[in-house]
Image (cartoon, rainbow, N blue to C red; front, side):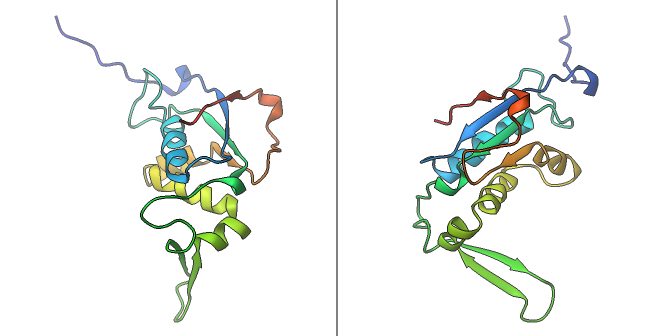
Length: 147
């Protein structure tokens, strides 16, 4: 007897809404678990070439923790390059956490997703907010616990 592989079709994908509280959660752990939900790897119908993931709302991004070998806020740097000579901008993780917490969490999650059109479609389902207020209350999101 030959087994059949289940391929998810776009019309049969059911999407849920989850809300994640990032307060006192380690940034890397948050990013990996949110990326798994965005990709749909927590579902039995996961298909690598289809976007089977759910929507994720991340609140309290300004209160996320950083640990590890990078020492958190002083050793890790974020870089942007404008393309012009001398156009390299460097910011430490402490500055990013203070002034741009939403961008810091978005960059961490984007780093865990596949690159290309499929990854960009997955990233559009992620909503990050610096405080505990979000605009997606009408979708009735379910709390997702990050361990």
